[in-house]
Length: 139
Image 1 (cartoon, helix red, strand yellow):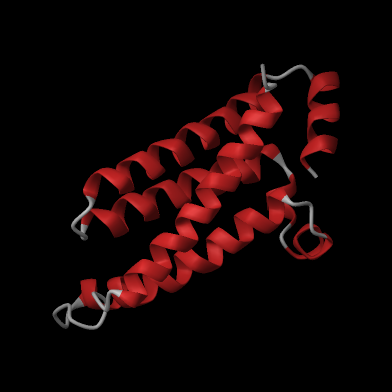
Image 2 (cartoon, rainbow, N blue to C red):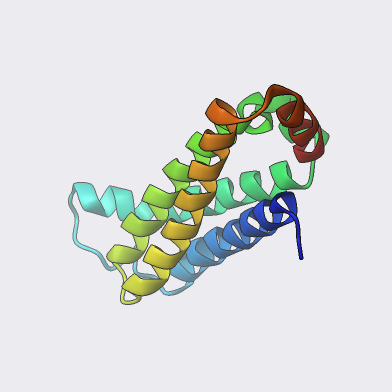
C-alpha cells in the first residue's frame, strides 16, 4: 500500500503532465486562433501557454529541482503548494469548459483541487514534528 506522500507525489506528477498536455493540445488544435475577438479571446489565447508553464513548474517542484527551490519558494511550503494547486484547478476547469471535452477538465480540476486541499489541511492541522519530516521529503 503506497503511503500518503507517494499518492500526493503521483497526483502532482500526473496533474502536471496533464496540464502540459492540455496546453499543447489547445495550441495544436488551433482553437485559440479561431475564437472570436473579445476578452475571452485573450484568455483563450494566452491560457494554454500558462498551462504549459505552470505544468512545468508543478513538475519541476515535485522533482526537487534547485532552480525551483531558489526562485519559487512558495512551492516548497505546504501552504504555497496547496494554494497553487487550487489555482491550477480553476484554470484547468475554465480552459476545458470552453473545449469539447468538459469532463476531462473537471477530472483534472478535481484532482488538483483535492491535492491542494490536502496540502492546506496538512499545513493548518498537521502535527508539527510530522510536518517537518514531510516538508523535507517534499523538497
